[in-house]
Each structure stands twice: as structure tokens, then as C-alpha cells.
Image (cartoon, rainbow, N blue to C red; front, side, top):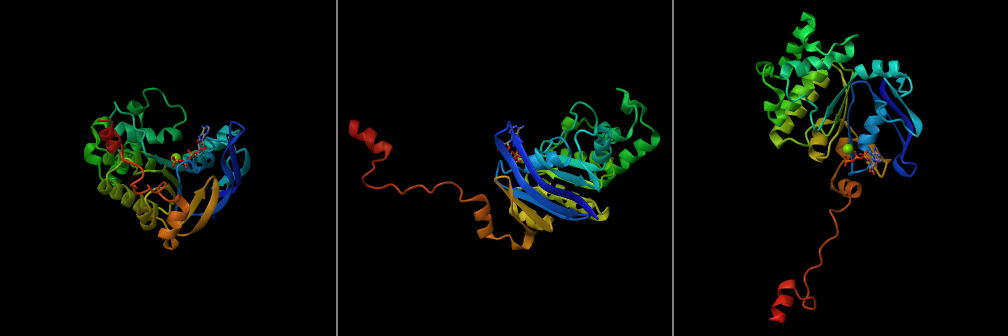
Length: 270
Ligand SMILES: Nc1ncnc2c1ncn2[C@@H]1O[C@H](COP(=O)(O)OP(=O)(O)OP(=O)(O)O)[C@@H](O)[C@H]1O
Ligand SMILES: [Mg+2]
């Protein structure tokens, strides 16, 4: 079965800014796919339309066999429960414990959630929260306040929180953009292991090509809101990278004798 079907999505902001222009692809259950593309190419907009946070101007999205319709709130809630999201900025609640943050991951499954939800969460939920923390290797930090963690730890807690949803799809928008290389690799290893052991479909937005090649089977490259390429990560080489991202700005002209350097201009005034 296809986990994600994107059919000719077009998204126009403010009736004139075209963010996505006829984007189509399908992703099979259990696939691991990276979205590549320059800043502003439409990657995050695409993620928001997948989960119905953004309504496409044209086209449709089907997630796990059900069409995503921002107008149908109840359907949307059901679908979103199965989609775990990970962001660059972690999204933890700073002034409560790690354990409570993870517990909040199950909020979508509780019918009537009081403000004091975490105090009254069932034993079953509490046990599951500890299991999720254990899976990311941070059970020993359960009582620590969330703002007293390193970036790498925060992202692993965010992953534990997401696991409370028992997701069938994970969408990760630049999950390691704020992390140093070592913490970044640990988070990527964790995401890849979890996706593999539970047959979760993993769709990630990543900027580093080597990381993308290591952790995804397939890539979809966006350029100016369109699908520029879609294929196996093994075909990505330097030429492709240059074509996708362009050169890194205009080359600087070497200084010539005719154009005096600023310091020479200043010196001549003396
Ligand atoms: N809420 C919005 N209102 C208006 N325009 C928007 C909005 N969100 C995004 N855009 C525009 O849509 C285009 C795509 O933006 P988007 O954030 O999807 O790109 P991105 O590929 O995620 O970029 P980045 O790599 O910088 O995160 C950009 O031109 C952006 O300015
Ligand atoms: Mg983005």
C-alpha cells in the first residue's frame, strides 16, 4: 500500500506567490525518503499540506489511504494521530519534566484531556512513556526539566514523545539542523533504527547530502516548487548537487591593477 500519495499539488500564497507547482509523487509503506531542495523551494510547505495544516490551492493528498481534507476536522485528527512530526526546534515544553513532555505525546489519544492531564494519566500511559524514553536511551533523565538538556538530548526526547503516538509515518523537517555532527548522527541513527524496526514510513527534509545518502533510500528534489528529480540516492553526485543548488554565489573577480584596492585609494588621498 502507498503511505503517501501527492497528486498535482499547487500552493499559492497571497494569490501570487507560488510555493508548490504541480507536485506529484507516491511513497510506499516503510520507504525512507529524503526531500532535498534550496531554501524556499517549498519543502516545509509540502509537509504542511501533507498534514492538512495548509490547504493546497489545487491537487490532493492521500495519507494511509485517506484523503487529507482540512475541512473535515475529525478525519484530520484521526489521520494526524498516525503521523509523528519532528522539527529542527524540538518543540518541547521548557518548564516541565522530560517525562511530562513525553506523556504529552499521547494527548491526541485521550478523549477529554484536563489541564492537569499529566497528573491523572493512567498507569498504562505512564508505563508507555517510560518505555518510549527507554527506547531513545534517556530513561535516566525522566525527572529533568526539559530546558536543562543538550540539543541532541532534546531531539531524542522529542522522538520519544512522538513514539507515544505509535506513528505509521514520521515527517522530520530538518531534524538535525541545530545539532553538532555527532549529536546529529545519533539522532539520525535513532530515527532510522526506529523506522526500520516498526516499518514506519520515514520522510525527511535534510540539507546535508552525505547524511541524505546515508539515511534515505530515495530522494525527491524540489526546485522552485516543482519536482526536479525523484530517484535512488546513489545517483546523487557533485554535478547533480550543483544543478540542484546552483553555484555558491558569483565568483569574485581577482583584483586587477586598474581597480585600486580601497586601502590604495585611501593612501592616495594622503
Ligand atoms: N505562510 C506563508 N505565507 C506566504 N508565503 C509563504 C508562507 N510560507 C512559505 N511561503 C513562501 O513559500 C515559498 C516556499 O517556502 P517553504 O518554507 O516551503 O520553503 P523551504 O523549502 O521549506 O525553505 P527552507 O529550506 O528555507 O526551510 C517561499 O517563497 C516562502 O517565502
Ligand atoms: Mg523549510
